[in-house]
Image (cartoon, rainbow, N blue to C red):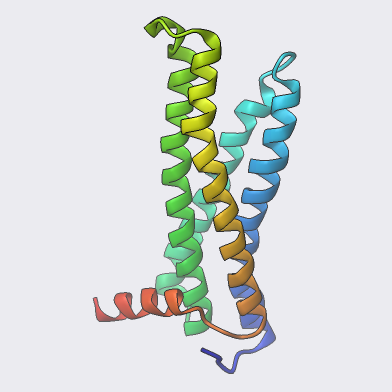
Length: 167
């Protein structure tokens, strides 16, 4: 659905989508690959990754919640609400798969599993679904940012705004 929006509204609406894309691509792809290559020498990148991600996701959720009461533009509010919904979904996914992976890697040998088995289960059950979901979220966020640039509101964002307006 297209709306008449100003360039300032487009810039404000695009900010949270850009933060999410930065978190998804830079933090979870590049820093993850960096941490895998350095895991034998240092644990700093692997511990930095969740800290950065939680800060960025929290920022998106906080700003979107603040926009509910302060934002006057429906266009900006819809895009902020959509970004917050995806940030919450990603945070839940990140927490569940991260916890599962950590438990399997750290606790697998204590449960009698070999190191190879625990790592294989951690990657296959914990990280593979996470990476697939991450890819889907990256595509969805690129699409939302593109629609934002064109002055469009995605149907999912409009539905979120309608649900809030009714409440």
